[in-house]
Length: 189
Image (cartoon, rainbow, N blue to C red):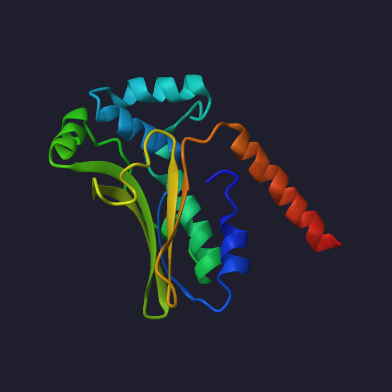
């Protein structure tokens, strides 16, 4: 989620809570591609647009196969839920098998296909998954279109907290790096 202060929110704002689950749309490229498929475009066309706009990698394989999202949910699960998972532990599904026809069918049925990351507790273990889900129009995740991201944090003491980043410009990522450096500097003082 680029520069969104997820870690400080959880670390400082949720003291005393145990995070029991995470659900998010965390990869802009796959979310953008799926949004474009809803309008009849192809994966290849959407990737070219995303590359031209500067948010897709030259080789988008890791995004399209779900590896980027798997790395992100693994980091979040490890940092926020005290898990010990790697991207290889994540039950992962990419988007390469999704067609415009499938996306348009979901829209006609009042849903959107979204690349959803999840982490949840199963006993003492934290499980993780990345995959395509049909999200109903009324779900808070439905409006997260194009390059938007969203994260729902579930805890034992509070209703889910939802953080939305609506189509961020590229400088949000740069801010995230600067913010990380400032946090490291604070730790050293």
